[in-house]
Length: 316
Image (cartoon, rainbow, N blue to C red):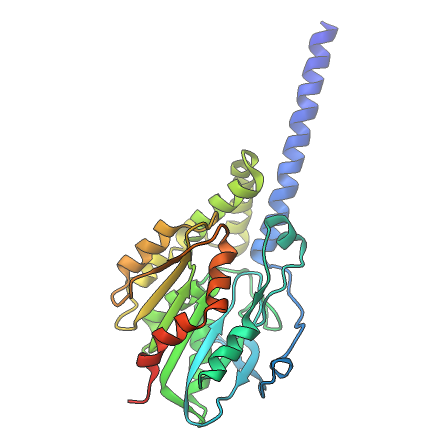
């Protein structure tokens, strides 16, 4: 009998430890999902030899956004808007946070990418999405559903400037930024060309992310995290589906880029989005053994974006 009782106590102790660990992990990821740690600005365009303006403008729903406008050498010129990843900023990703260390995130240098766009003759608008960088916060990150208002506000702000060609605007979105782009496309005709780098269905991403980082415990932790997210964001992850937004992209040409070895996103998910996008170019699936390989491919090979934008944003 004593042996049986000790076994029960041991079982309950182990169960309690597992439950406690799972809840702690779920709370950690919920907090980062809703309000990821804000990265400080560790550089400015001046560090890359670029003149720039510090700018602030309202999102379409009124939220304050902060960013940089890097003017082209001659005006009026076509403009490219750059939208960063979840947990990133207008500078990209410094990959120094606890979450970055846990997940194996790699640095992403969007300032170098902006330099390449500027050198090619474009104005560049790079800003922090809500809940990131120096922009205002909202209730929760919604993985594109509300962040599209940030892009729409940027488009509204650009149209008020006299030094840009409002008829020639391209957008490059990475991850969260790509989702925001897809959600914005049905609501505007001001985007003349778009590159969506690794957009993703949030529920699919969450499942694969949890499984990759936590193994068998991922399913249990994700159930708790998803329930907490639904309460705080007032919407479930399953309800956020950018593929439905992609069907309303209209005539805007869209190029999708996706890493073949992305353990969190999926080639098939992006291929499905492309198949539902009315004017999608053939998707570009690049080699790599991590999600960050896709982001870094575009930064390291800006000619992919420049060649796609070139004929679409050229002077008519």
